[in-house]
Length: 577
Image 1 (cartoon, rainbow, N blue to C red):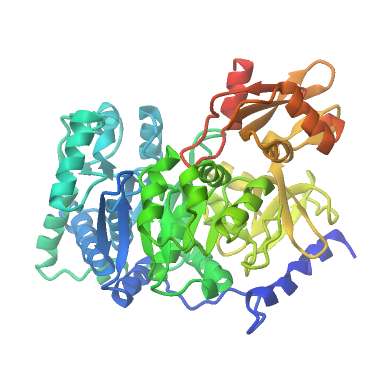
Image 2 (image 1 turned 120 degrees about the vertical axis):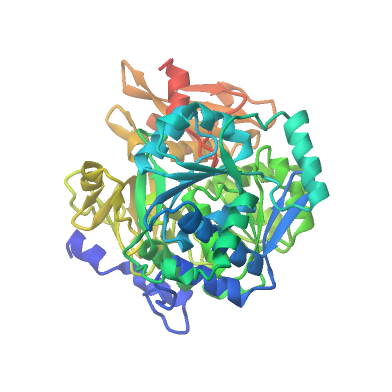
């Protein structure tokens, strides 16, 4: 059998029986809506009196909104955009804030207005902000008050016509909000002064309500939207090059919700779940899974504005019966290093979802022993809305991203785009209804990434005989030692099994003898081991060419806001680049 034929035969299909034993179907259930506003409205009506969102601060202070409140407020914001700001359908509206109650209200309002949402990382520098505003062509911006000084410095360089300002403590009880605002402004000094002409979010909603009272039907803004219309510009590539906007349609996102629903829906009890959102919603993982998928299911979403330090999550676990959480390897590892978490683990936890970076086996095993429920690893990218592969819940395999989502084709190919043999590493390529339309206004980049309907991920993976996939590493991070491929994830996973190690980053450094040499940068949770100890441990478990030639101990590793270790920055710091 040819390699092409083997992939086309989809050996993973048999595993769908474990996912959907009642039917054994291998396709997503196409029962959702034609556009996201219809899905959002349906959830708002179905679960109107239930809690939708709670923002939980590190000290336990909180604010909350019901589904009915989110529905009414997002309608008012949609009217504000269309009637008060006179924005046309398809206009880009940027949102720049951490997890807080304002975020779902304005995100849903932008979609209901028939506009295109542009998620912006609130930690961006002024230069990065100006690039994204200009690249997207955003005409309006909703921003948290802590970052208006950066905006003031660059707004004249952009096309932004109106700014709406909000607070992390927005819609908290008045006394609680007042205390928090005073602390943030005068004690922590994180709310700067500015001279911008802005509307507060409350002023924007008041204007929207006033205009809506004149007889505006919000439904008119979005009833024409189809699955092929663009819903979201999700920027990616900032850690590897110039940030570019993945153009995700209503159909891309809804298809991914249908795929998630078909493989995990039976484990999600409508109206009864509580999900902790520590990952930022401006990241595609939390946007699709935490915000959209669990809102659709009527879950209570507990928002943590900033999970660093990890103790910021403690009161959320203490005060709410968390049944689901999404995160990356570093977040789960950090929780397992906290005594408050390991002594009193969340017994209501059903499943922890992992993605973004490789889940280390040592972390997965320790999580199950401490919490009593699994971390289920999946795989996806910004360009794929994001889910490509998943581990069937209850059928998890260690060191595996699982099997392709329903209606998704996956191949592993070599540098000539030919499918490789089973068990051989190559680049993972994918096609399916969740794959983006393209990169916003970047036809050349789009042509490089999308070829004959296949999206080239840049990740190295392998497939087993029965159709399970395993990510080996990023193509760009692969280390070449004397002609042998070394994948940093494998070495990092090995180092993670040393009890004294908290985390590590492995990179390749130029070497006169071997071309590149493996260097490891290690953060310890407790003292007591040396460079020789780490190397000796690796020699027991790895081939000689994979063993780090040098081990350096650091106090911390550079990370993205989501918690991904930035190997590029590690490399720059290590080499003086």
